[in-house]
Image 1 (cartoon, rainbow, N blue to C red):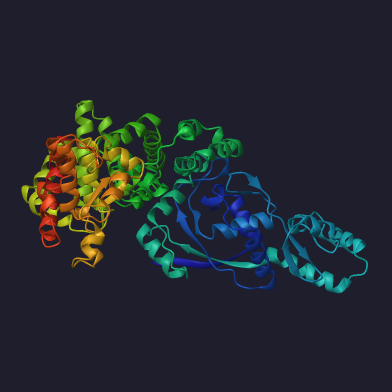
Image 2 (tube, rainbow, N blue to C red):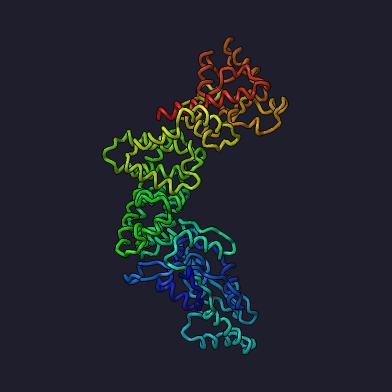
Length: 596
């Protein structure tokens, strides 16, 4: 069976199909990213008969059309949204949604004598030789009267040249644009592969893009559910946009969805700022127990996962599930309580989480466990925190994670969350992991390493103080940009046989410390600065770190997983120091994890 068809459509027919919803453009309610110059260039290309590229559509089954009708087949535009929106603006005279979600006009002018297109300006509008808004000509009741009035204003122009060029402008309405229609029985992965091969830029089209497009085809409800996802993600990073959305999108403001996300306008939290792809994935797990975004497309298309046949009666049920899942996800209480859980595990800053998918799955797990009435609140928190940290340490949600997600959700349901988590821990967090694998994983120079960041989280959770700090904690320094200090100073190592950054920038040579302490230590070797501290402690004159006594100093070293022999470390014993520190860091992480 053919995977696609290629047809041609006139501009006016294309716009009519969009107006009647035969072709759905999910992007219409998102900000128009083209500037007026690109719109002008598109009109110029159509005028001169230049190709403007193919549009790509994908057949959708059971989409709702205007008037309540259901389409047997509706085309979803998956490539060409900006071109269609530009045509609607320039030819049909319709408004576009700008970055502030406000409807504005983009007006294109045309000079039928010089055959130039331009963005309309006050100067152009005052010049009678220009048609200040070509949409007025395209939509005039009498093109003949329009032409007569132009000639009355411009008596000195060449009438024949004017009429010929005006006819060419009129021809834009009948200019042919190619449409590649992809078959409705293709799966998302195949559609994406075809898209990449057709699209000369090779820009990948993600499964989440398809899911967002599919959601928007379900009439007003689908369009507003898509907006709910879009606006939630936008407000999470730009709370000030709430006023723009509430004032400029009357349709969405009239739904209960705006009120559901209104809390974001006062939110300053940035630990978890999900993109729409993240929300789609969480919704898939919460609403459908599915890990792949493409599975949501199948569900919303009414496709039975067992028979692979389409049953249109399944479609409204799927949208009900999606709506319930989304309203759980954007709920203020749920979202804030989940973030409090993650922070209580020590991950207090977005920079400490290098896996958005670990957060996504943990949030989905949190929401699903809220439905398990057999679990106490304490047990629910324990499971979510341990799962999140386990996934950070094992990379469980990296690589080809979608199938793993579905397997995990299924087994959590079958075996119970606590039993399944214990099974994973016994398998992946064995004594060998803590004693061998984790120290080896800490042999890295990357401060973004999930292993180093989990060590910092352990310090935060344990209320550990910074290196040689009397009272300032790692948590405080993490929130206020404390210094990453080389325990064995870089300058000392460079001058003593370690010029390679891969040696002196090992994370096992790092500790968070106060800026003043970092400056005071400078490039002194550990033997010298630790001797200085010991002398200060013994004399009672404290200038470095303000350690009160030897026991306090030993406790500080323990909090930072630094070997007690640090004062004896030299360039010759540096490698041995790194090995010891990695084992201590791994032991700190192990104790922290087991205490969660």
